[in-house]
Image 1: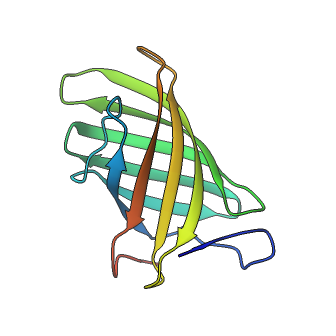
Image 2: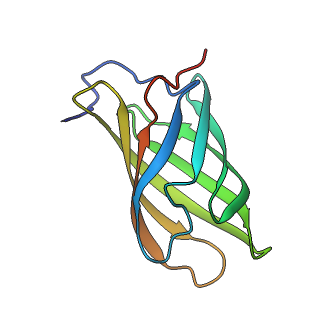
Image 3: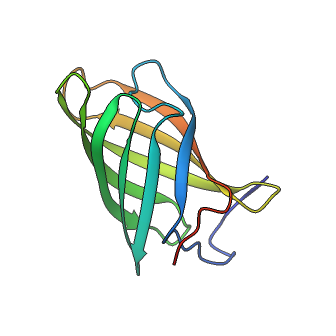
Length: 127
């Protein structure tokens, strides 16, 4: 794996889908949750659902170093509306897929923090 930095090419997240591969105990995303990313310039957004998540959305920005800063909101299967913020660092896997290492904090409920990892689903890119 290699970490992206500002001297490397820009990552385009548009049309890529991701699945969770790990999450902290206080997180709600699981390997059943699928994220569908979009990008226009430095703006990214995504929809996600699956597992404990009925429907969720992300809005944020791509920084010069390809890291992502975004806010998220979703409604879970218990009917709770949850919100949070996240900083994601991309890594390129040996097979060329993107892995995002995430540090997140709930901005609702108990306001705990955690870490998670999501990986691009193979052959998921749609333009």
